[in-house]
Length: 152
Length: 152
DNA sequence: CTTAATTAGTGGCATATGCCACTGTTTGCG
DNA sequence: CGCAAACAGTGGCATATGCCACTAATTAAG
Image (tube, rainbow over all chains, first blue to last red; front, side, top):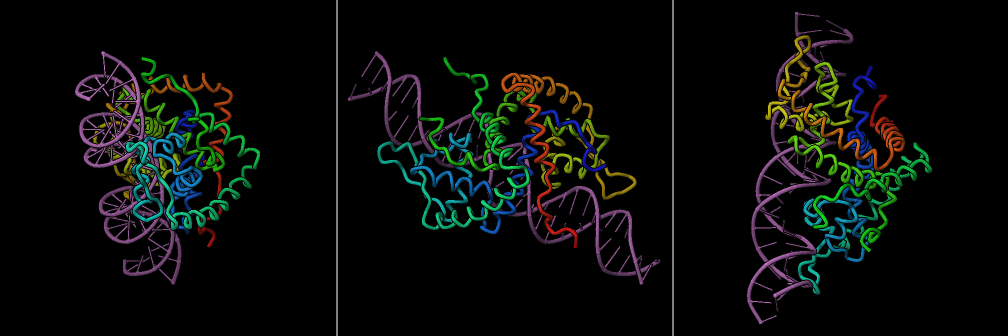
């Protein structure tokens, strides 16, 4: 009487998605924790790493994240010396981001742990299923819900 | 060169899940906004509504959410008079939650908007696909990753 | 070349979530 | 009964995310 105690919200796509995110987030967080990073931070460092000194806007777009939210999330990483920013000399509006040597080391450390989490998860749900699920989630992230106020 | 600008993290199940959650969350939030509620709040009110004056712990368990997190999330709803709590007379440790008349009215209002979002989303991804996705996400939320420190 | 419109970030404010330490209640034992 | 163990929440602190108003830098007009 604990599991199905309170059904119902299983119908809202958004609610179900959030719930799964909380659960999976806790798992990845737990596994990556020994590195001192949250799974979100590990992901952000990785995103920065694979980019070529990406501009904040580019990172935010890639993560489908609000620009200001990215700015906030970046702060603790800058504070801890894993990331640094610098103004693009060709366009001073743009601020680019890169890992510091320390950040790179920390990312390596976190990635080792991440692989464990990733592997464990895929062992549980199946590699195929995981890939299929990722594809579906990617599609959602790429959806184009009505234009907020575009095409003047 | 904007969409696939920064690939990569498309491999992390957790990152992809979070990204989709941000996107879908914004959509549901936008649609439900006219009610003055966030999609998360609408979902929480609904969860409380379908429960029989559920205890906080029961709600947290149903949402796979930390108990303290639930407490925090509940505050603005209590502040705005949509929800009220009371101690269970049979066990004073337990605090039960219920909607106020205002909360019920607000929920109705929000549900109307929610249906629009839900419908629009399902029209875009397909009712079948949405249901399948929800089932997959439910499974994730129900996964039992290793025992934290159980079975002494 | 000035000025208006657009672009890229910042800062403030608010909610969403978690973890941990701590308090009040119950329950289980001896 | 009296105390230790277990349970349910609270508060504080920190990150995750968003929206909005505002500033700085570019670009597009005229």
